[in-house]
Amino acid sequence: MEKISQLYQEWVGEKPESITKLPGAGSNRTYYRIEGSHGSVIGVKGTSAEENHTFIYLSGHFRARGLPVPDVFIASEDEFYYIQTDLGNCSLFQTLEKGRLAGGCYSSEEIKLLHKTIALLPHFQVSGAEGLDFAQCYPSSEFDLIGIHFDLNYFKYCFLKTTGIEFNEYKLEKDLNLFAADLNQNYGDTFLYRDFQSRNVMMSLEGKPYFIDFQGGRRGPIHYDVASFLWQAAARYPSSLRLDLIQTYLSELKSLIPVDTDQFFSRLNLFVLFRLMQVLGAYGYRGYFERKPHFLQSIFPAIDSLRDQLMQGHYPYPYLISLLQDMCSLPSLHPLEDRTPSHLVISIYSFSYKKGIPEDKSGNGGGYVFDCRSTHNPGRYERYRNFTGLDEPVIRFLEEDGEIQTFLESVYKLVDFHVARYLERGFTHLMFSFGCTGGQHRSVYSAQHLAEHLNEKFGVEVKLCHREQKIDQVLPQKK
Image (tube, rainbow, N blue to C red; front, side):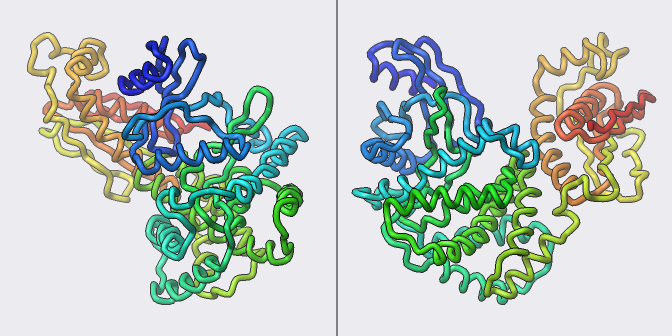
């Protein structure tokens, strides 16, 4: 934050009035809202100087072409930090929330915004490509076979293999090679936005769309961006609306370059399949490995979109298509409400190691046992002998000491990942136990806090037992 403040002072010649860190999203960049005499602007801290350089270059290029993107006012010498236009807090994704929550029943105003947005896409792809130095793009200057195979392998290793489905890797690789070659056919000098989706469109107070997160763009096929925008899984666009939006896009595109409509739709069909596979790879990596709940929640609608596409499209990759169909039929990849039994029940125990580890009565076995004895023990002090981990004096002691909270931070990371996977796979029981010397202070505190954390975060039913205190509690499933 200090370097952001220094950069702002270098730009305007005075200190900012306030700097507020903004909530993170899918990006690894950190954003700050800066208030000062020049109004509100956004400070950005990136993790890659190369990626930042590309964003700064493309922003300047697109603005020179009259395209609605943020202006970069100043960047640090190493380009790890820069300050840009504040486009507000409301994305197109948020603006369309009512229609999305209504299962794809969008209002006339929401539909107008979608048409307005997609009509601007050809201008980025065609006008934005004019005079653009593609050598400035990151991480590569063009959409090529290396990039295609990267995305296909992303799907294979970060999603397909996590499902547990068995497959012949040689047969799959043969079809993926054919698929990659078809995707890599000549596409001309057009700009591939790469991540053209409603989360990357900011809406001004006047209702004008502005575009962000284009730093992954490069020379590439126009069809990919159309697939990214219209087959965004969570949007649930009806097929009729999707077709209307494609017509708006094509009408604008034809005003810029000649278009063979039949060929366009044929190519689009390929890129819809490719994009759906690519996003599942991303959801797998960000959800399963980085443990980000938003991406885990996105898997089911993406599977629904892939299932629909496989029913409608015709693809000359028999083994790949057969494998995808089998994958989409897995019970673990259906929404929880479509499965039986209906919900996961988590058992959590606190206990004394002197009296043994609690028995798993579900018959499933497994689960986790966490040893709390490495943390500072209130039981060593006479004044805490008659209290438990549920009582305020012990809670205050443990939290002011801090060791138990550091311990639980690691527990939460492991447990959250495990619970998310059990929910996805339709499992019905999971058990966690916390042990300490007497089963009175540290284990009780830890078990209670984990129970409340899981019930709040996942809405699951939790059966809590402080065994040595003879206290049982049920935190009911949240509807």
